[in-house]
Image 1 (spheres, helix red, strand yellow):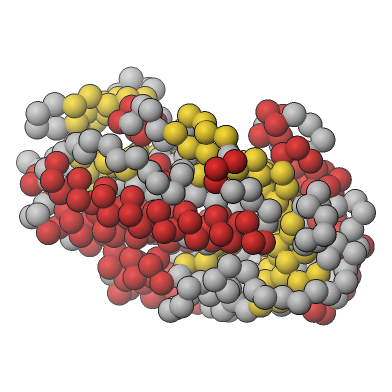
Image 2 (cartoon, one colour; image 1 turned 135 degrees about the vertical axis):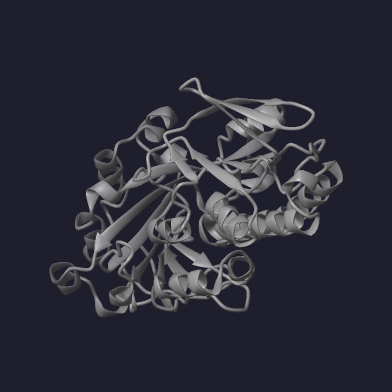
Length: 402
């Protein structure tokens, strides 16, 4: 009997890999440490651009890709660029423009997108399974969970995010970078009451609030998200229209310790957003004042360095997505790179005749291409972050263990 591919993590990269394996009749199992409804607060709106779209076309069946298209929001467009006092400034556009660096682009709600990619995987996804470590054997890999159970597989794929347990064991000396920036995510429902207080020019497109003359000010990006085909989707819980917003600020400007900011509750994060923008134009402040407090969260902006040191490949363990190359969200490349990793890995497994034929050479080739692609994506993300969100140069960031 062929042992399955074991996927640690049911994030976007992990479930995309699972869809591609299912499409090619390769056995797999996904293990996710959290419950099914506990979606990591890593942002609510994602832009799926050229590499991500190509990956989805490879990974999904035509029927699944059609479902994906129906769950997408309206096509992106540019909004306005203003200062915190509401005065308008010329808008050169965000890094890469709203649609990314050319090609097709889709706007998705992160939670809906994940639920879409989980469709049809029932029975192969196991929630509340916290992987603690793995053990290598000549013919298999055994993963051990915190509940005392184990599972054997032919290949373990660490798709378990920035703080990857698989990576910590596989590459114990891996170093990342703390950019010093913190990001507060939020949603504001597009209710009649909210729209009545919002200027017309703020209601459509992706807009930016920034003051290049005062670097102490946070930077705000906001965009209205609406789902034109929501009524055609009966199998998923589609959200109502909302304004997606992110507030980016250097941790030194947060009126609390860095440790405290990481552990802020939803209500505390919402209060912080209001506090940081207390002097802003009232029309802009409406976005924070009428936001859904329960949908607010704060995260650190971490990254791998552009030059990711190579590691010795294993025929039994590999990585994808943030576990291998976390990057700032300021280039809209993180999710696209994870999807690209997933489709590429699945295709390589297929090309060698199945997971039972995976060897170090195949994994090593996959990981070399992964690092090369990630280098470009990280550099793009950094350029966008420095241009629009005040990121400091890579050389000035603090190395951290991840």
